[in-house]
Image 1: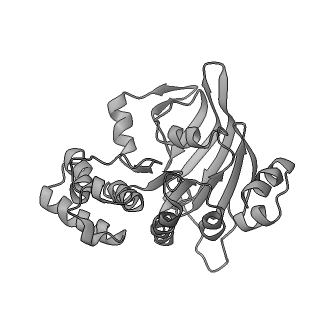
Image 2: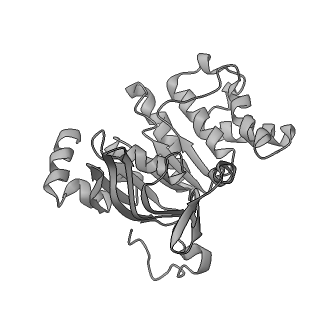
Length: 269
């Protein structure tokens, strides 16, 4: 969706040319309430896409559909060339067994508004848990990796602290380290700073900026327009379950083309 290629860059071929996320006419209804309406977009590998829009516009639902926490009602969603939660039967697609869908989900990291850390485990144990329990990684290996990841998010000295003794920003950084411990190919962030006190937002955004700079493919639902402007390759404005406007974040934020985008941005910028 972006136009960052220069003549100096090699042309993407084979696996590299496969979008990391491809949504094709994705719709989602809860009963008679259509929350997503015919969403089509793609995210290339290594790209950062920010989803912005008012509450109830379908952003978080779309994020949850990407890793099959919500089933799509129609359309197709692929991650790295594979349908998520479904197998292709040609004319029709069939839902996978939950165990198979869970296996796919291992490759997709997700960080929520709420940190959802295990309160009875230290920061280190929280980060170690999934690799040991889900992937069968040895405890020694998982511990070494957890220390490495906690250092990466600036919490090396907090490894033995329980969540109750960490600030909200520190808990969210542990949650990011925990998601990274599964070595995901894609990271999804659902308003990761909205539950934080304003002075703690920056420390989480800094970790996310570093993650983006390292080449991680990321989709971020956020209200942090400065972050979107600085870090995103593509900005998507959603409202009422549809994509209203999409483009380079600096261009969209400075010169929105749609009246609905202008009205929204006038309230948040």
